[in-house]
Image (cartoon, rainbow, N blue to C red; front, side, top):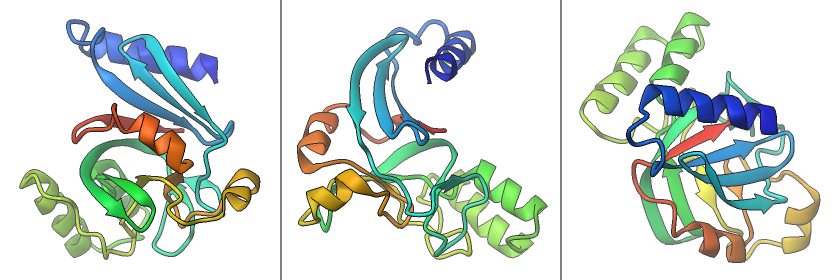
Length: 181
């Protein structure tokens, strides 16, 4: 995990060194079930025992496959309260996911265009394409904390306990980058 973290920090620093020291971003490591909050190159917090999609994670996520998308996303909406206590929506599908899906013939050119038009207009991408949607970072709501501690149980979201999402929420604002590996 730490070698990935160092590479990502280096890339962020090179891409925008003037703001790298104050830029808050989130790193989700799907292999170690951790979510880390970074401020520039400083580790602010680590949340352990997160849950992801019940069938793991993938760059080629599709609607209904119960996998968490891998890649770089932004928080683009916040819903409080929500079924899962607090919900911080991701801009999925984003351009990278749409481009890959089009190249792999998982979506049509028309679907790709609808995603790209929404992105270019500054809107949340369509959530009902074959790639799916309604993905984000959320709490448990009334869910079973024991199940959460034992299994990856989501439909593709990243779940934390309600106490963890309360702590995390001070860093989650629209525009915050979420890197999912």
